[in-house]
Length: 81
Length: 412
Image 1 (cartoon, rainbow over the protein chains, first blue to last red):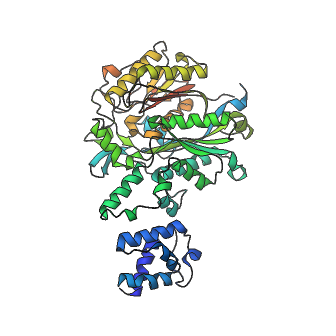
Image 2 (cartoon, chains in turn red, cyan):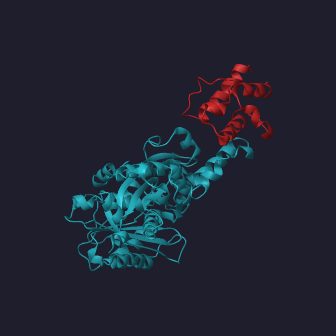
Image 3 (tube, rainbow over the protein chains, first blue to last red):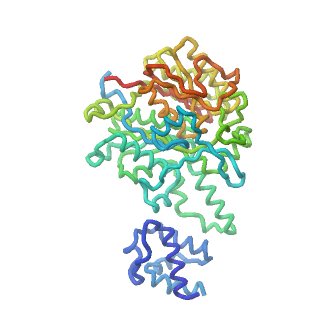
């Protein structure tokens, strides 16, 4: 799976979890929490949806690696390989 | 009585299966417009149910709707509608002196069923159990969602009281105002029960789930051919204030709450007890300083079950045997059984009688059961009775909880 595909998977999940937000103009290098109205419970939902939709597991110690869209793609791409 | 010891209703917000505000609801009740339709219920297929169609996002973001529950969404809608109706100067108010008291039949079944369903769909992976499950299912959840939405910092909780919930929520609001714990109470009842298959399946197992090929005719209280309860959702929240405060701000006053009572059958898990129902109505009238002939309208609980309707008829016949001016109606023929919301909603549907002098009819009682017949029963078409000054609202629930609430037209 390409990095572009992984990015889209994450964006689709964020769009469902934060339905009032526009995900079109996200800066990939900036913190998601700084750009969107996301809290710690929302990040748990992102982890949950990755598991439910794609059978991808994110251990608790790796949660900080989901901080930006860029870091999400870097961290998740090998799991989608 | 001192105005600080008189409690009045100054705002009403509601959603019912046949209306999303008091005007729509009253119009539907007067004109026998049903809110019951066939809905697809998980595992069971098509069932008669009363679902509400209010705009969930009128007062709540999509994200917070997703975070919360259907009962919370109903509560937020009703609370905001009531607040707007009351014309309270919300921005200037001390929110620590505002309380939220909501009666519920149950809470948490919808979320729990959904979590188990999702787990089954995903190979029993327990790690998919949502972190939101606990905040969604704690019993105070619907009232708590109202405080989050309106930034209320006073007390909030729900009153678990089965299908007496609507009346019990209002009574709690009255009591907290009388105790001077708060200055404004958001009080009433809500229910999301129609979103869970379990309640349908359980009533079916009891042989008490309403059915009819025409869903609008499924709920038939007092009718000879009634066959059970049509399960519905809904909500109704009142703004309650002390009369002294309402007068100060020249508020529109819908009614004064003058009597109430809650008691227990202590006799059966599900079967009603007409003796205790009589005691409950009598206690409410005693508190109001009234006798049976002072009551103009009695709104029955009347769910459409075999024994429930007969027992309540017995109780009303005996309580009002000496009153020739008391008219009796019921609401569940129109909307089904809105569970925790029923008492508050059904009371609201009768409040406009103070203005229009009409008694809305009970619907779908085309062949009245002789065991449920009584004098002055208003069925199938509205009746103009002239002046209406008092309404007694019955609401009963499982485990033998009875409630009766009496309101009076406000006169300065």
